[in-house]
Image 1 (cartoon, rainbow, N blue to C red):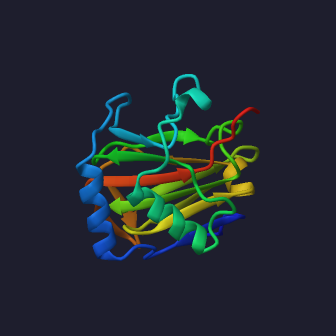
Image 2 (image 1 turned 135 degrees about the horizontal axis):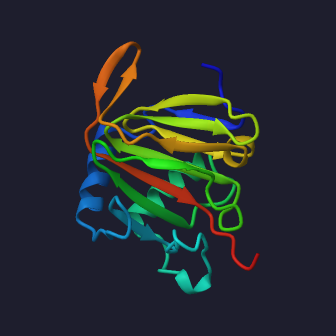
Length: 187
């Protein structure tokens, strides 16, 4: 499969013990049931229906555990600015997310998503040409969208219970994603 310009994918970004610790702290935190999947917001709450974010949505600084992961992303050169917003999404087998480009006036040009738990395919579609590509997200990996991959490719996760990886069917289990961004205010 041909790569997507300005997309960075890092396998084993986290160790198994880091993954287990993060899942433990996430599961001890309150979930919101605003969507078809459970979510948690940190830093700023994003309004999915209005597709907007502003100063009134500030929830406070990232908690220590999330700030530590944001710092790892920054230290490894995956972000130009230290992330200040995090959305935690829970996907049960059969759940996905429709094709989208993250809100352009809401967030800076870099978005990183860490996969905890189950692996899954993330599908990309070029907004102009309709060309399709797929990236298999392994557990403990991080995918970073920047530039062209951020703005010119929609990303989605099909709502299914398995993926075909190297010719073999792989059942999905519970996946938790940590999606880090930087909020654009006053634009």
